[in-house]
Length: 241
Ligand code: UDP
Image 1 (tube, protein in one colour):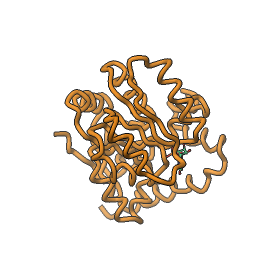
Image 2 (spheres, rainbow, N blue to C red):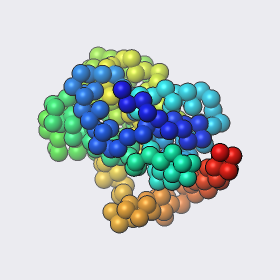
Image 3 (cartoon, rainbow, N blue to C red):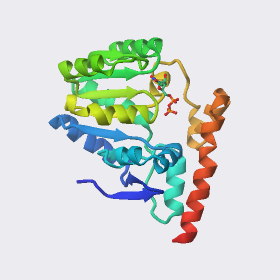
Image 4 (cartoon, rainbow, N blue to C red):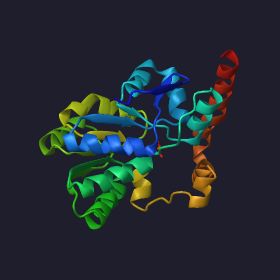
């Protein structure tokens, strides 16, 4: 198996390329494996340090992929490099494309009602081979209705956008309800549906996606302060090595 992991401030990241990861996902889909993907960025690494329960959920996931240039930089700085950034958004796109290719069942959960509705429409229009077995927005009070629907429909892929740590806690609790690939995708439906734009390619290539998001959503400043704090901890850890 692929369990070659790199520990960055307590979170254990998979040490593989995106291409290798996609091969694993293809195999998982073919055998209908039950898998849980988490996509930590520096903010999540810091949250996990403060919350042992959340840290265990993350480290016990089947795939822990580096979503954020900060993770790649941190790994390099600690002398344990990992090959490349693999984002939650790109993984969501890959899973949707693979589900279309393999004619599989997909369930969407999370985001605002109009965003999830637009995401469902996009799937129906652009990925006609997918069997979209259900979708629900992320502002619900009672989990049981959703879990029952998932359990009845038995999707092969469940995309969950409730933000962190809510989405990881939800998946960890309910993943046994369907043998699917489960992934927490944060704000990805906002981008997938066209409601929000992703940074221009040039900014993505220059690793400035975070700056674009800050510019578009200045209220994220508090969350983004996690990055210097994280780099500081990386530097401390490096000195202690
Ligand atoms: N969200 C939700 N239910 C909640 C809280 C958040 O569905 O109770 C959704 C929200 O609409 C957004 C996503 O979760 O689509 C979180 O987005 P954010 O930008 O915080 O995630 P990130 O990509 O930064 O992890």
